[in-house]
Image (tube, rainbow, N blue to C red):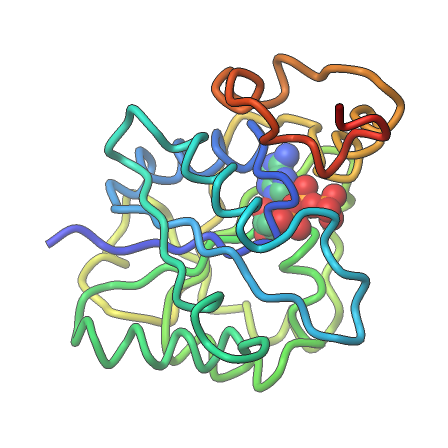
Length: 213
Ligand code: ATP
């Protein structure tokens, strides 16, 4: 069975940076990849789009291909979820199947602020892709946790369910949801930063436009 890799995020909105990184990770790891939109905790600024809108954009973005899937479990739970709990649930479902938690280098550098972060290495491998504009410098405690775990994508990590850190050389695309929200709010139309379908479906991007009509 292929490994299962998960890319969590706010996806407000999902964009070509996420999609290409997920797609190339699927190729590099020969894995099934699921995008997993997160509920946002009450103390964080709420996404501009509603849960329903974020899911509709993800469905539109993923239509017509069968390599990337969608996992909505965190949205279906009451309240926000900790990644460590979601991974424990996935681990219980998948037995010894290798699981890979995917993230950009920006998210990875912030890992020590996550709830029970050291436990993540016991539940999954980590797959980290470079993010342009982001300097790859790790806090000391993360450096220590990573040393000895680094593995080559072509190596033997597939024979273990968890514990390795894989650096994924995906094509660097300097695209962020923040930038896309700003462009849409200022009346621009970032046609080639998002999949076509997201423009072709009426109202899908209305949450970000200053004049949604
Ligand atoms: P925002 O600008 O609203 O903070 P974002 O574009 O960073 O959003 P998120 O939903 O926060 O998107 O990101 C989800 C995951 O995808 C994170 O692990 C992040 O590092 C990664 N990611 C987002 N954009 C890219 C990109 N262009 N290239 C590689 N990884 C990315």
